[in-house]
Every structure is written in C-alpha cells, then in structure tokens.
Image (cartoon, rainbow, N blue to C red; front, side, top):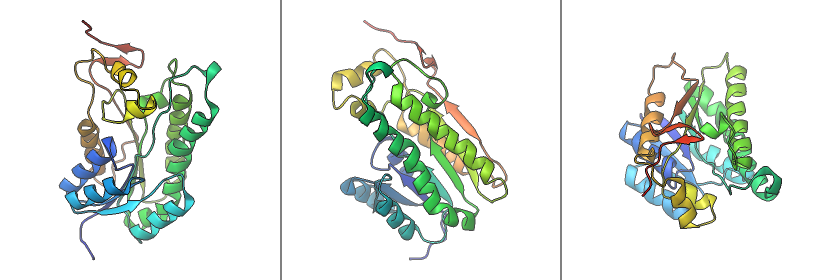
Length: 249
C-alpha cells in the first residue's frame, strides 16, 4: 500500500540496537522494513510498530536480493546494523572460521545490502547509516577478528562516502562503545552467561540499545545537506576500550 512516510530499512532488527532503532524510527514517522534472520521476531516487531518484516540473512545473496525487491524503488534510510562478535581469543590462538564469519557479516554483509539498495537510496536522496564500533577505531587485546572486521566496516563507510560524493546519498557510521543488550555478549561467548555478565561487571551505566537508537534517530533526521560522517558514543564510565571505571564488591 502506498505511503507518504519515509521508508527505513533496518538490518539485524530482531533484537538489541536493531530492534530499538526500528521502534524509534517508527515513532519518528518512518515506515520501517524490519530485516533479520529470525522470522518470528521480525514479524512480531513489524506488527508492533506498523512496519513490514523481511526474513534476511545479509550473508545470503538470495536473501539480500529479496530484501531489495521488497523495498522497491525508493529507500530514504538504510540502517546497516546486522553484525556481531564471536569469541575473545588472542590472535595466536584465533578460530579462523570465526574470523571469516565475523568478516562475512560485518563487512561483506554491509556491502551486499548497500549494493542492493543503492539505486533506491539514490532515487530518494537517502542516507546510509552503518553500525560500526569503537572496535573499528582502536585495537584491544582479545578483540582479534572483531577488531579486524569492524575496522573493515569503517573502511567501507569512508570509501563509500568518497565514491558517492556526487550523489544525493549521505553516509554515516555510528560507532558505539560498551552497550549492554540481551544478546551481544551472550552470543560472543557462545551462550556462556557468566562470561557475558563479566563484560559489564561493576559498570554502573553501560549504554543501552535505546541510547544508540536515539543517536540513529538524530542522525537520520538532520537536514538533507548535513552529513554526520561518524559518531563515536561511549558510556561515561568508558574513557577508552581499555579504561573502564568499575566498582566491584
């Protein structure tokens, strides 16, 4: 059905930052296409916010093509949020399959979705917002494949902005630091709740998914001539990757 609302596509919308951003964008007047691998979750979210659900694994060429077909000829905003981390091993003992998986979703997946939706973004004079990480700015011990992948994400954003300089498409990276969500750390440690909890132990107020959704909404609603190249956002307790204020018993 035709709509006068601007159209936003959110990948990785089934949980965490993606779900929070989809809700916020819908509240701000966007029609939101919620894209993620878990059909039950994106369908429930789309029903909740009056959007549309598309089951999409960004590492699948067929899924990405189906997403582009579902979006159609105009897209005002792409939030390329699908990503993730696996493990915290040092480089010397890295699981190379995990590294490949992280690169595939955090880099190749972003590029695939951008390629598929770029004609619709150009047609709408739209915006690409990529969810990066402070891991894409500074390395840290144990970051390994995630640091490498998110540095790749940052490089994609910077290269894309240069290549689209004469097109009506803005390109932004939002790079969060420590964000506590239900699944990010849990997935990183293969479902080990104790290890996931240890990431945030003693930190009074890590960022939340809603904090980052607020950043997404602000970037997405700047005037068309304003481009936010990169927004780095951390909790006050995290001065740097390696410097976090913790109060432990």
